[in-house]
Image (cartoon, rainbow, N blue to C red; front, side, top):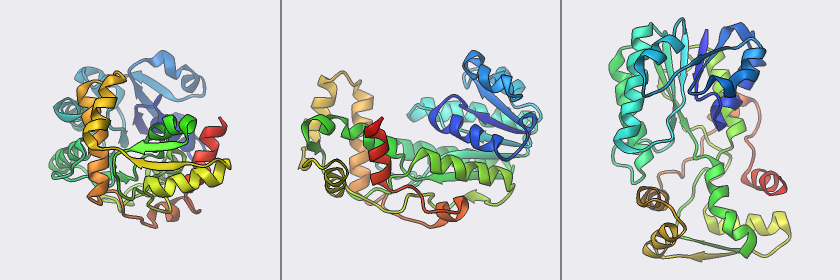
Length: 286
């Protein structure tokens, strides 16, 4: 039995779909906050149980019988994030889970300039302390984040963002394929994986060139001072912690924390990961 948390989210949902191409549905279970949102999976024979990272008893029930648990990281930051992960890991230990796999991130480190990477590092410490077999999937930075940053430029033609550095932007679909491979080849990685990245590390100057080529329109790149970006984010309604979090992505990129490009993802999925140009073209066509 393979149990997946966050199975109605972007990565979890895709991973379950890829698993169902590889194993019978009765070997797959999901732990979700709202089982009604996973009704279609239940109809296909997937075991659906309610599980909340704020309710340890629900997680113990949701994780029951798991040989492997894919713990999809929470969409939280700081102590709230790590506390939720600790609750899930403790529940997994109590449920007798055989192996825990966790969606970490390339650049996970205690001294990262990006809060989420510090949270990932602390969660990896918790996994290490369990004594259980574990795998940290060091996923490349989700290309969906770059596409969100580009949304204003889609209309203005100017990528007005803080100074950055190269980032190995990586597609959810490729990461879901790789995660399904790792889950069905049990024990392939012990501890952190190599970075699971797209084929190139790009800064937003290069992305401006890509957007120009893909669309046939001219895109420019205008660096914005960090303070100005922070103020603009607040003015557009972002809570102060989210504005700071977004800004820290650029600080970490300038520090080279997301610049690594590694062949492991391509080897796992048996093809070259989607280049950013293809991801951009698909997203903007939709």
